[in-house]
Image (cartoon, rainbow, N blue to C red; front, top):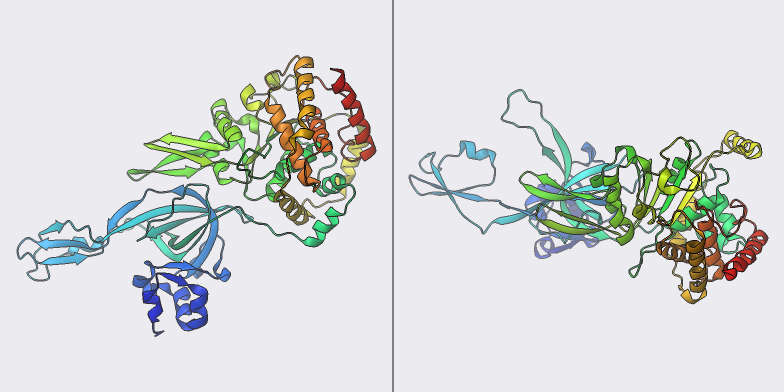
Length: 548
């Protein structure tokens, strides 16, 4: 196809594709559908206003070959910034004739164009040096198996990027052959890669919401009951655990302090712990569902990987899910070294790597929701240290530690059986829940500490005086955790500021966890649904706190 190249393409450093589509449609069509025809002119340009129709998943195939595409994903590996000489100059030893080549294979058959000589000296020429960097992109936002694609940038130095950054990359789909062509009878092997043209670093994914559902929730008199009925309908009851998970999901990134809560669910197998984790991983993006049985410390955090003779950085699950949630099933299967890598990430919200001459700190601002069993066949009451294979510093970093155990309750078992037989679909309202919680997550609330500071101080003092065991767990981190829960509950209730009701919800959630000493007794399944019962227990708890 013979199409004239516009003069503006030569003179412009930044190519506006929308502008070129309108003014030069034939040339733009050639540029997108067959970019190799103008390959020499393409890679020195920057692009903007790239059409959304070019966006595809990170699953390249032959139909994408030699076409410009746009892929959104997360950087999981950053290779070193290398340099290469595009045109190497060789000088003939016999006649001193200069000759330039740009193909490594052609050196084997290189001969002088003047005297057919075979002996050359390589001329050191730094004028044609070009940068070269390889990235690995993972498409974590789409459903289905995770896909990765290698992205190669040549001729330009990229912005400062680190593993875990969310980006949109535009480039040309190419073939990357990794077969030794000089070895006889070896089949050709190749994979698809992306030769990068443009990269845009993104903020967290903005998920739209349906105004109709949001208005319905806004006008609902009992918002807690509404959202609890909507959340994970496949699981019967467990309202206190569901509310704790919801408050963890609506916490967002705050520059001043950590606002996302970490939650641990301990219990017997077959009671829905994994289903709760899977449901949470579908609500917030980015998210990752991993299993502690097949996870290492570097798989959780980050590591330095040797690439040929150089070192590069590769992100783990906590870095990739920066700004989202990381769900860890079989948390007890992680060994002590692997759990040790979580200490910095859960408290400081960062992951540090100091290896191979690199000292890098990644953001890991994600909520950790974990499910665990216990060491012995029978759970040892409320003595967490003797029942769990978790150190006290790590255990204290979880804001809520729920227990989920099998008990003989014929009425409840009958209701669970009815729910299973009714064939309730776990994803029936998942989009509605997803849009609603992501909308609530973006709300801002005034954190008025004066209303809740005194209550939390009284509650913490009671715990220190009355609690004999679990003393390593009852640290000042409890006050921080209660503040986060109260703040997120105010967001969930669409309030402008935190009030005493939010503080009591946080304390009731804390009371429903695995503690050996409780201020008052209450039904955790009922207290967050029945407003009259909730008000009654507030009065009872207030009296108990004032007594001490």
